Amino acid sequence: MITFDNVTKLYQKDIIGVKDISLTISAGEFVSIVGQSGSGKTTMAKLIIAEERVTKGRMVIGDWDITHIKHGDVPMLRRQIGVVFQDFKLLPRKTVFENVAFALEVSGATNTQIKSVVPQVLKIVGLESKQDRFPHQLSGGEQQRVVIARSLVHRPKILVADEPTGNLDSINAQDIIDLLKRINSFGTTVVLVTHNREVVNTLRKRVITLDHGQVIADQKSGKYIL
Amino acid sequence: MFTSSFRVVRFALQNFWRDIWLSTVTIIIFVLAITLVGILSGVKVVTDQAIGVLKSKVDVIVTFKPKTPEQTVLDLKSKLEALPETASVTYVSAEENLALFKKLHADDKAITEGTNALTSNPFGPSLRVQATSLEQYTNISKLFEDEAYAPFIDSGGKTLESNQTAIQKLSDFTRTVNKFSLVLTLVFSLIAILVVVNTMRIAMYSHREEIGIMKLVGASNWFVRGPFLIESVFIGVLAATLASGILIGGIMLLSRWFNALFQGYDVNMTAYFLNNFMSIFWVPLVGALLLSMVSAAIAVGRYLKV
Image (tube, rainbow over all chains, first blue to last red; front, side, top):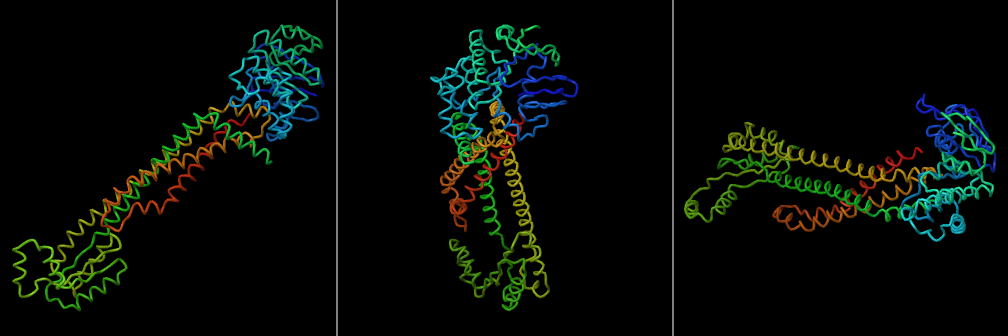
């Protein structure tokens, strides 16, 4: 599903993002990428959604070699991947419904499809009663659930969650992790980037540990080892 | 394509309305900039008209000695009319000059009695010459120095010299006023353009995160840029309409003053402005539209590289 083949990402020639990473994430897996700040976790997430380009090596998503992806093809790639961010990244001038619908609108879904699918997804994340609210009228946990709904609505095969619990209290954080597990149980590949030890240890899923841009451990059912 | 276009327009309307304060402030700044340029253009038009009136009042009167043969005067008249620098030549006979003198001094008893006592006409005929421009009087006056006419011209040379100084001063003054008003209009147009472009840049800067989010969710550049461009069109149209309304309202209010200013001359400022209504409306509209769209497109482009 996702292949990093000897991938190196350098910033400004000599600042290492990630170095010589080779790994494969299979379809339907739940993978946690852990490491300290600056270890290259977010760079990996950014490489998957082509927010950053590979300096050396090869990257494949599904059957698509995105190593030298054209700028015009990036929107097409992103429509096939759901992304959840630590700082939510909701559109402030759109309601909950409109934020979720936006992911479908960009891919050209019809209004009938949007009216049918968005309420279903909002129900999954428990926000069906708050669909007309604006982001600033929601709590942090609710905002993150809107982001998850937006990342799910176009039924992506991959969901990349970059520190999704970073701005949440422990109860809301657990809710979000439960939601990610549920999404994974439907067959979606989930890549969770985190430095939350508790979350990683309770998941008992595959853990890839990074240090200074390199993979130092890849455990099938691992724990936070740093 | 139709659904996408419809969505782009809907997003633009939504953004415009949901960020009504930013939209209002942007429109107000646009209106002020367009109105300022409009006022300066209007001042330039009024100045041009006033200078035109002033220029039309300038002429040279060549007075002939009494008993100058009429044929000599008419001969000079024909030669003057043949010059490309001449706009018009009017022949005034000796009798007409006397009648005009009497009319001018009708209230002065002593002069009236004196002229009534005259047994012969002390006035000669004259020619009233108007040039196509102030600069041409020097060329025209060369003809007065011709041997065939100079002996018949009554102190013409002296009058012409003093006239020429006045004409030169007037010519210099009008040229300076024209240059000044043109430079002023250009400078303020440039300021207005910079203000509009910067306003749009600030508006787009405040939406930079939104633009980045749209891109991360999978929106194409067109889908992101479209609503902002359409929104800039709304702003441009509204601002130009308001500014035109203000300018036309101002013209209506000042029309009485304009007409009083040019009373007695062949100038009607209200009619001038109303006849040029379309250019007063369309020029700011097209200008504001182009400016807001181009500056919005450039400003959005900076944040699309996500």
